[in-house]
Length: 497
Image (cartoon, rainbow, N blue to C red; front, side, top):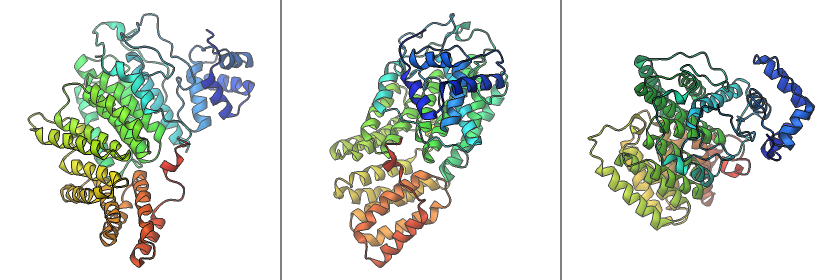
């Protein structure tokens, strides 16, 4: 079907540098390698895809996604190519969900397929030593607009066979997925335990060393979701998928794969909603908001936080709502909105102390304790201090309390506390104390693989400039230079992101 030029495919085609004839030959070769020997694409077909906007039948979109992924060194999905995924005639459009060019939100029956496709391509890039720095982040406002109505409605959880065409449905758009079989409660318990292991490793050592393992586990869970399990098991399996997707996104963000991280956060939100866990969906979107603040896009973060908070539902526990408020406050601080930030943090404190712990927190909230509450307050006040230096002493107080309460096994958060404390001391004109905490941060940084700690360290280094000429601070500046990798920070690469 023709619908005008496919500008998305045309842009990617230009980046890849192929001729139309070359792309046609590559499609045929890749399709044959995937078992589709009958495919015979030619130059005229490629021209119709690009110039006339024709959507080819499967497996061509899947083949094209794989080819562009490998060529460009970043994950390229079928939606990125400008193709709308084809649905079977027996499936109905979900009520209240409209198609849009970005493929957000996708239909419920597509979530497992999108998950396995994306993780499979991510693993392929890992194996071949490619990086995902060439993609583009979707603006927070665009994500919020696309997902608002979808997140505020309950997913249709019918018990008939409309979810899949047959009990063992498996979508062809998947990569590196073994033939999974239906599983039981013991296997799901083992998966849930593995999530806890990965989460503890991430908190301690950062995302670099275990990211590939998490993505691989998520890919396998996507294969399991291709089968229809009893409803209570299916919800738990979606919960595992949501938790793994958040971890994959957070680890990707931690090592600078920003567009990849954002995609995982969106996948996590979809998976959580499929499992009927709206608070988890909201928390997943709050991760995307934290990512936006870190990258210097606080306006985009506030758009996402509005969606995360409103879409989380009434069942969200007070402590979870407190955590969401601290992220909103950080975004407000980055915009210099001190009065709004203080009001939001006050609401967060009230929510935090109102949580009586009579309802056990979900596993994904267990790391947000009193130390984290003070750590986020320290970060917000330290960020505001760039606009209003009088906020620096308050940042110091919260950072000191966070460090006092910080439990073992949270080295990365401890490093952030040290950096917040040192930065606030520099702003408050206390270079002696600043030097002490900065060196504590430097001593710990070799134990993690977190690029975010480097970004925060760069921000602190900027503050040392006013003390150039002090012997102790000059030595510190040299040590920071030796610690930091060469190249610009992520905030200075926003045009590439």
